[in-house]
Length: 306
Image (cartoon, helix red, strand yellow):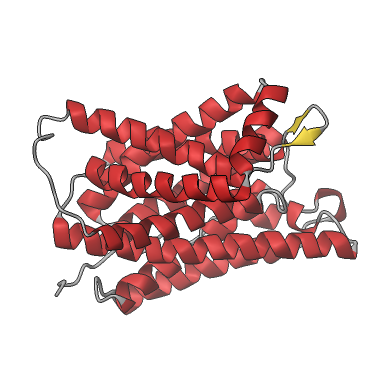
């Protein structure tokens, strides 16, 4: 649906700018490093928007029963993807993180096949392979010395270890995305929830799990103290949470209507525009070969669900 694509593109390009800003900006002489608290604010805003949308929906009286255990597993992988994605930005540049996440179709396709939710033609698999290869070529490209990529910005050993930590976190987020996509497709096929029901219950579980984590780790108190010391971050946080919730509204509609892989195609193509926005906004250097376009994304071929 055209308005799904437009909604995802607009709100997640703005979200990308807010995400990079809040994770990399210096507030005074310190940076915001309380990732659990950041994700908690994000999912709480998502819950609020989904609850309001359900209340205003003409079909609000209709309820779909969703297995609490299945939703709990889905919420755990969903949190893992967001947590690792945000934490990775403390170690690698935003364009690098986004490019790794652009391989999302591979784990989503693999999870759908392993769970028996969908099957794909050899041509579709080849397109995914080509797209992934193109992204890997981007990461391994060697621009000229005066326009080195952020991935190779530091040559010393400490910087290399930092980069590896960030890359590992981005890959962990990618793995969580794969399970999340497959679990969402299975839930949608089995229960047929509305987009806002799926958004509400996934994020509500995430709120509960993250609230426990904030208490155990003490990050809730630390984040509140940070915000009190640097009230200017509240605007960045509001933009981060607001654009996330509005963008997720379109993503969950797409998942409920079309499935996880077509949604991954939308979000993957969106990421290239997010990289462009990040490069233009924050001044990240890219080499000539890194601007070459990828091959077209694959179509999804749904299979019967047992």
